[in-house]
Length: 169
Picture: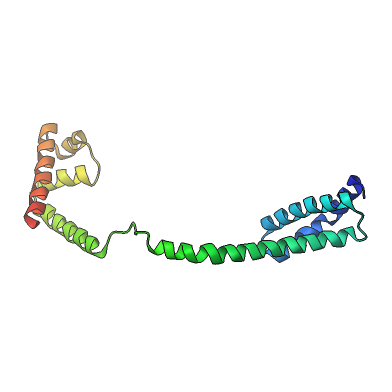
């Protein structure tokens, strides 16, 4: 069989081969890979001998390749799947521990109580700076005070919170 005849047989059968391979593999992308590999094997086989049923031979190649891929994937899952599961159990989690979570919640509650104890203007300046991301100039304009007083109020709030946290420890 000449290269032209081989190519014509393959091109004529390709849509059927793709559907067949997709049914066997369950994945159209993998089916395309199987059919491509089948073409390479078919071309190599027809260059050395004449085939009585070239289309049937193509389907047999696709069947065998799909079966080989299935077996290889199953074997890889047996070998690597169980080991990966076991290995994953030994990888430390990025999540904080329950103890750390509880400490953080307690600390947050303490800070919330502490901020509510600040004088009204100090609390407002602190909240605008820390929670609303406002600059000192913006805080000063909002509260009708100087920039240096705004800075002093923010620093006063920060120091008050730090002292509360130190007392807790």
